[in-house]
Image (cartoon, rainbow, N blue to C red):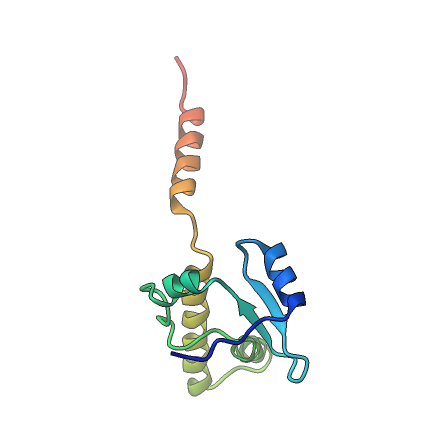
Length: 123
């Protein structure tokens, strides 16, 4: 079992203020941001079927590369290797978006049904 670090009183207060929401903390030496979350909630996410299904994690560096390839594609063109790389990055960002913010199709279906019923002709 990994070592459990003890929180400072200041962090305990911030964690209590956050309630059930994760708390973002920054390492002042590296400026990396970490998330403090309840261990039970973390385990649920870690063991979920979607966890890790995108071949790693989506990062700012990957997004920057994707955007650079898109800009290059439309400004000067990209070669076959870059085309494959862009397609892979596009697939990865789509998978990440579906994982973290799935489209609520049930809500869309309800809205469509409501629109169809209000547009139906009356006699």
